Structures are given as C-alpha cells and as structure tokens.
Image (tube, rainbow, N blue to C red; front, side, top):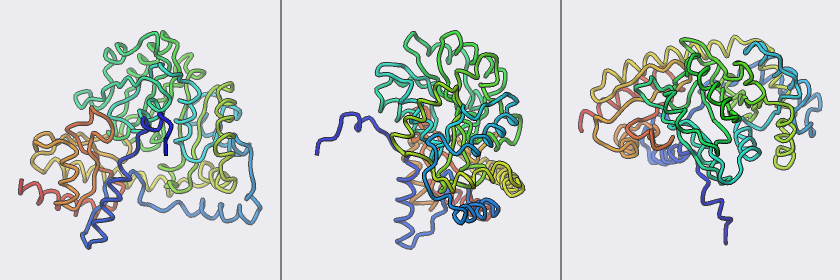
Length: 387
C-alpha cells in the first residue's frame, strides 16, 4: 500500500505508547504506578452524568448543527464572557468532539505550505505534528526552566518573518505547568499585531491555576478578532472520554471551521452537548474540589521529587503536571523514562515527547491519588539510589 506523502509527516502522542508498555508490564504481574497520562483520575461529576442520561430519554440522539447546538454555543459564550470579561456572540463559537479538532481545523484553515508557525517547545506534541502535516514550517519558541517555563520576549520576537502566519500559545502549559505573566502576554500581543498574525490560544487548563491568574491574550486591545481560543470539558470536568471541546473565534473563521467539521465529524454528539450545558451552568462543587485536590498533590510531588538527589523540580503554577530537571542522572530523557518504567515501576514521559527542548526533563502527571503519588516517590527514590 502506498500512503500519501503527508502521512510521513504526522506525529503522535507518546503518552499512549508508554501507557501500552506499562499495561504490558502489568499483564506480566509487575506493579506500575501511572503518572504518564494527562487525565483526571476523578469520575465526571454526577449532575453531568445524570443530565446525559436524561438527554437520551429526551431524544437527543440525532444529528445536530455542525457548529454545535445553539443552546450550548450560547452557554459557552456566556461562560467565556464571564471568565474573560469581553462580549462573545454564540456565532463565534464552534463545538467539536474534543478540543483537538480546533487545533487541527485551525491549522488546516490558516496555514499554507511554506507558511511559518511559531509554537511552544516543549509543548503539546500535536501542535508540531499538525504544522508538519499541512506542509507548514515549525518555528519552536523554547520554553526554558530559567524563565520559570515562560517565554523570553526577545527570543519570541526574533522568530518572526514575513512568512509567519500563525502563533500558538499554551498558557497554562502542558507539559511544564508554567503560566505566561500578563506583562509578557501584552508584549507578545503587540509583536503579533505588528506582524499581522493569527493566534491559536490553548486555554484548556485555565481553571487549574493555583497561584497568580489566568490571562487570555484575546483580552488585549485588537486581539479578539485575531485569536482562536481553544478550550474544552476534559480537564476541568473530568470528561476526557466524552470528547467535547470548543473554539471561540471571529465569525468569518468560525464559518470555515464549521465547514471542516461538516466534512469530517458532521457534528458533536447531541446528548453530550446537553451534558456540556450542565457542566458549565450547573453546580461547580465537584470540579472545584477536584482542583483543590490537585493543588495538594502538586505540593506533595514537588517536595518529594526535590528530596530525591538528582531531581530539580520547579513548583508549577497550574495544570496537573510537573516537569523536573533530571540532567544530573547523566541519561537522555528517553533512557530515564525507560529506567523509571522498568526499574521503578513508574510510568512517566520523556521531556522529548514534547519537543527537542524537553531534553533533560521528565513529565509526571499528578492526576493520581496521594497514596499512589507517595508510593511512586518511594519507588523512584529506591531505584535511583542504585544508579
């Protein structure tokens, strides 16, 4: 079989590959603690589940509009307006099966072959994968530990050229948990306006900020029309398997993204969209408790890693990831990932799973119970003491 050439440029998420290896070891009887997958270990709040069940009985089992049910788009507009303090029209909202299609569709719609796209590295691997897939030129902006895993503005500015078409921003960040400060985002917005670029702002962790504040680049003057806000239900409401996300963008682009949705998924499941309204506008207690628990876990894993010789771990301001420096162990990140899995029985991800600037780092997801996190720390300590 001869595949299209573009398929050779398509990347993947190695988290699922590591998960498969970990499951194979478990099948052999080895205990593995899973700190590799970026998925809340909590169940979806009960009120959301009950609303989905009711939606089935109400007949929400048919096709809906490609852009999303009007009532959910209105709810998302209200939610975004409340969070960001700017007026949002429901016609600026597109609902998709998960948040990833907003990445995929935005890059498909905006980036021609040979166009340059600036994106964070280390960062979510699908950014670079999709840039390459459409024939764009990836221009990574290094996310460095010495900048508290934020962006160096001079370095950012140096990446622009007449070919720059799109800038991807992820704050709060996966894999580092870093947050770009307001003053830096304001400078970035000015640079972007000077070069007349569009922005894809990935804000899926916007509710998981433990210190400081979440700021969207869309809120700065003249930035709303040139920003695509990517968000979703998976993290805040533990709805990873439901597959529902959204994008907020100018109406002209929203109509084009909707065409891509029509040509691929047709629409997002109607009953899940009804549950999405309940998620946004129903009780928030369970979600807020989950976020409080993540903060406790963060403090435990950061303190625990820093107590183990060889680890240097900044305390992230957001998300549910830590990104410790492991250079003192003298291994490549991929080798250390394998060592942790096979010798410590702890599944984690090499920093290079998120790009070349992740070398020397490991990502742990603390979306696991406190007892399991403590056990993982003990197993890691015992394993590295033998090195």
